[in-house]
Length: 254
Length: 254
DNA sequence: AAACAGCGTTGCGTAATAAGAAACAGTCTA
DNA sequence: TAGACTGTTTCTTATTACGCAACGCTGTTT
Image 1: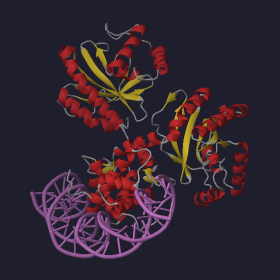
Image 2 (image 1 turned 90 degrees about the vertical axis):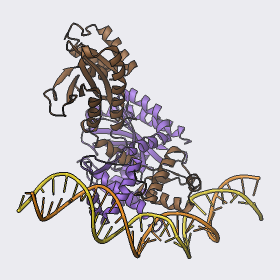
Image 3 (image 1 turned 30 degrees about the vertical axis):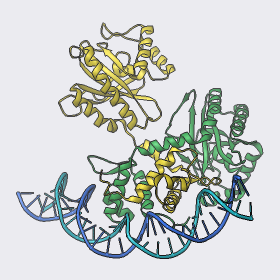
Image 4 (image 1 turned 90 degrees about the horizontal axis):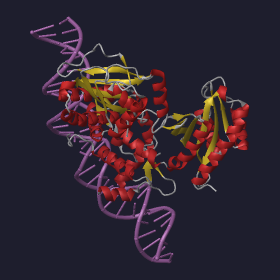
């Protein structure tokens, strides 16, 4: 970006914030001035300006400057405005173009997953029939990805209520086997759907976490099993994982 | 505070942030310039400067400017640095498990309380939506717990500035009544919120003192009023008081 | 289609403004 | 008590950020 068009004092102010944010005990005016190689008084004036707005606080005893609570105010406003669908969209598009396969985005709702976005390889994004539809969790990649990260009490409850109904001959129907599958998912960080929901379809799915660290959503790349050999899965999983963590980050997950 | 010593462009930048934070859809350069009654190009340059640091983001399609994710980064660093938070954490967890109700931890800041931690039942929430939010002091348990122990001059000042706005039909709006309520809180050592902030919610709150003996924070257990009969309050208050004094001790209060 | 109105962005000259040097007023140390 | 630190303030200078106006662009209106 053009460094020409930047406002110097604002730029300095933001540099100071970065500096201050790194020392939790706070920093002194002189200390900051030395580190940034600018004059004390400049630092002082910028600090008092930011302190006036509550972005910076001065410790009454030590005189040192620390981060102020206004960052929490703004941060919580930002969190309120985050929407999974809009945040995820560009990442899904990118993943779709790269893989040239179908990408799904789902959210968790009452023991099921709800499809809220779909992207088809070459075609443009549009309202597809599957958007809004619900699916069980135990036989889908996205469902297992979320299930693996839910609190175990909730997972138990869902399994008790929904059971493990057969969808294909590959569906995991044994409770013990399913629980250890979830453990494996958690270990790997991603879930596979090996024709467990629909014969001939294989998926790679990853969970998406919100700002509170809850697995609120998941995304998957689905493809005909014929195209999903081990080497392809190995390659794709990297990108799916990366995309998932990018979206989680956009939702405030740190 | 001296408006003389402030850096104008930094001040403008922070005003812009405030403005932007109020519209979650974002704002345009011209829109901001009109509202602040300054030139477009000034706004533009300040925005690009902040965008370079990630405090502001420009929507690729609409061209509008929104809050950027750096606020979340700084916000989470700020939360980490709050030692009250780290010291209190284990005690809050214990209280949360024992009561199986919602536990809140707030700090006092400029006549209001700021939520810095929340425990729900058994789970730990990294950054719940309420964390960072502000609330008035006069109609919350935590607010009254702190208010009762602040120097009376400061209490007076807060009441003058903020008044006693109605939140529910149970909110104490008479100044004399409120002051004697604070006296009662001080006598008992804990505060009750009997649906004064939100109908159907009852809280028990206690102040937390720092090493200098200042009431800098408070914690509360909140529950539906139906679950908060007199006997339960009697039982809970003991544990809340104990937890509060334990945390104060950890902060150096003797 | 053409004219218009709106946007975000850019270049430029000028005057306001932020930066720097140095003195000031404290505090803590030796 | 002298010294070496702070954070704060003052004052002068030229740097710099400002406002003006024009630009390219998009979408709408006529």
